Image (tube, rainbow, N blue to C red; front, side):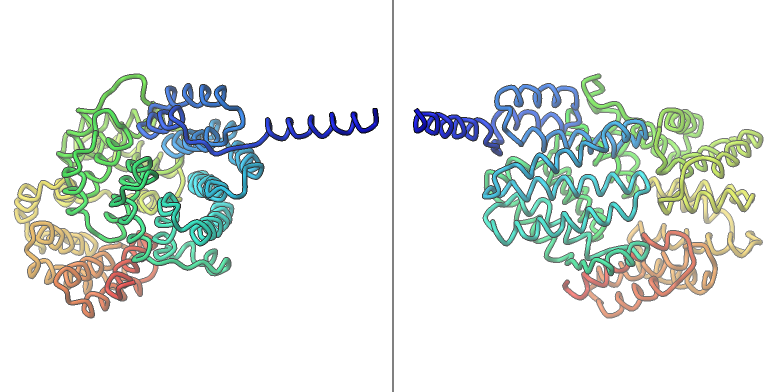
Length: 496
């Protein structure tokens, strides 16, 4: 009888352990959920996650997919109330993964991915130290996983971007990275991303669309290949109609590569079904495409929609300043001034664009209308119109030193964008000389742009000298982002 009870207890314990054994099974349902989520069809993705949980309650992949849901919702919309609801989910997922099989490559991978997602979200909500701490832990986990499972190609999807990020840390984060002893490599990170995209591995195919997104942004900003990446996106014939993540990428990179026409076309042609996640980001992006073509009433309407519906902090001051410009250029001085006062009261200064917006608002000085219109046209890629507008006035007609500096810098940028490098360098050099010691960013950006031109020509020593000059300039607008770009240029020239 005694032995019988022992046998029954052992059998019961064994059967319980079998039933409770956790697995990482990226089955068909999970793959379908992942595909929907990364199109930003969040509701359909959640429905499939719930179905996957019913199919196997011990499968941990649905938890990973829920991480994508939380990340996209919080990253794009920055709603503080949503953050309160969802922030603990990251810790719960981390606990759930701890119960998973430790001999699976997904064990460390899922934990690292979860930490990286939380790190990015924490930046959005002003938790800078926590963001770096999460990044450090995630970095250590994925690095360990890379060594332990070198054949698990999904590692590259996380480890590659982390390597690049660590190779170009802005000055504002240096104190944290030095404290944690983190180092990276742009060259190694980008090689990992390219090997992932070019692989026929099962994991590479599964995560291909996500990898395209990361690669495009890293190459665009860190490798400084905006023209190549726009061509790359077009050559890949990515579905920017039914995949809103791709639509956002095409729109955002179009705007930032001075191709407002491309950005507008992507937004206007995307599938506007209610099945996709609603986000005010579309109003923000559309506002810029309208502003850059001087479609001022339409731009103002889109900026107003963004400000009304967006719950976050990033780019609120920037949007308000641009809205004030819309009113200013239309001659509505009362609305312009009231809106500019809101720049001081709303939003945050977490981004360089918001910092500049606040500084501009506090000066109480409106920009010269000719320079402003030219700048907007130039930023949209309408170079011929911008050049004609700028050359309609001589530099001597601008009385203030700041306006003269901007005039010189804008001439340089137009010639640069038109591929007239020699003329661009001359104007940039004048901007560096005229803007030395001033708080405006023009001199530092001019040094950066000259570095780009010489790097493109293969004159790397000259390029590095101008990148260093950019970094050496202190106390100016966009310091963090310009330093990061200059540091990336130095690393490229050094083959790092």
